[in-house]
Structure formats: structure tokens, C-alpha cells
Image (cartoon, rainbow, N blue to C red; front, side, top):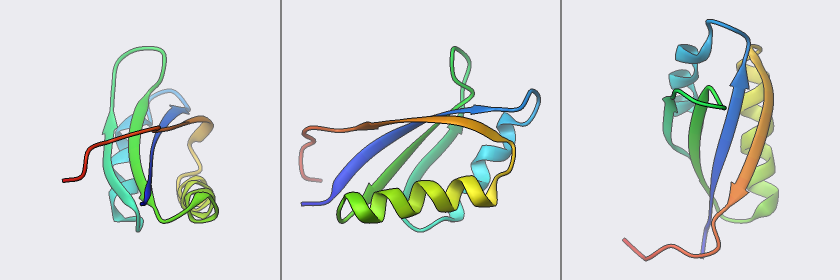
Length: 80
């Protein structure tokens, strides 16, 4: 079963809309800028924790405006 995670992202001021570019990264299913404590939320699906780690690091490399991330790994989600 794949891993689903939600990556909460903080960006430099005025750059959160650029997060939609994360949608082009393999494994990223949803990428939205949001209001609140974080600037964006990204949903990622990966085959295992190693792949999840690679996706998050690739995202940070491609988007230099990201200053902080917090990853929440889903414990359970229904099959689609």
C-alpha cells in the first residue's frame, strides 16, 4: 500500500502561489496555497518512506522560496 502524506509548507512572503508548480513533481497529487498558519498544503503519494523523502527534497530544491516544511503521514485512507 502506498504512503499518503500532507506536507505543510511555509514560504517567503508573497511567494505561496508558486507552490502550484509542485504539481509537476512525480508523486504530488494536490498542491494548493492556503490561508492560515502555513502558506501551502501539498498531498503526496509514494510507494515507501524513502520515495516520500526524495519527493519532499526534490520539491524543496525546485522551489527555493520554501523556508520550512512539516510532513504529516496519513495512517489510513480508503482505497479509491
